[in-house]
Image 1 (tube, rainbow, N blue to C red):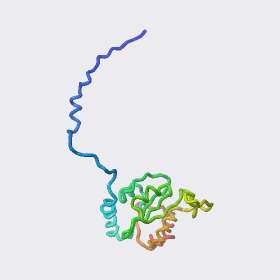
Image 2: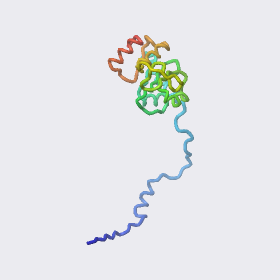
Image 3: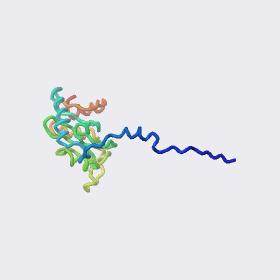
Image 4: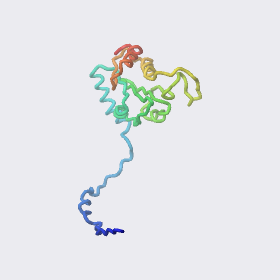
Length: 181
C-alpha cells in the first residue's frame, strides 16, 4: 500500500520581509588590507604594558610559555603542538625566542633578533639534520636548555617572572641553572 503525501508549497517570500530587516544597511566601509595588527602595535601597546608591570613588581623579564600569552604580548600567531615555542621578554632588550627548527620560518620574520633553536622535540646535543649535522647523542632537556640560554645572556641571579607556575622539578632546575627563585 503506497501513501502519497501532498504538502502545500510555501511561497519563498513568506517571512522574508522579516529576515531582510536583519541585514545591515549599505555603507562605504572597505575591507582591511592587513590580516593582523602591525608589529609596532604589539611592541608599543602590549609588550610595553607588560614591561611596565614587570618594572612595577621588580622583575627583570618574563618567560612566556602559554601560546595565547605569546600571541597577546608579541603578536606571533602560532599553534600549540608538542614542540616548545617560548619567548623571554626582558625589560630592556629584544625578546629571546626558543623554538623548533620547524617553526623557524614562522618566528624569524616576525619580531626576531635573538633566540635559540632546537631541531625537534627529541633534540640531541648539536644535532641539526636540516643543516647536515646528523649525530647521535643524549636527549636534551629543553627546559634546562632554555634556562642555560638565559644564563648565557646574563639573566642568572635576576628576579624573573613566568606565566606559568613551575612544577617542583622545574623549580629545582631554575635554582640549579639560574640560582634564584
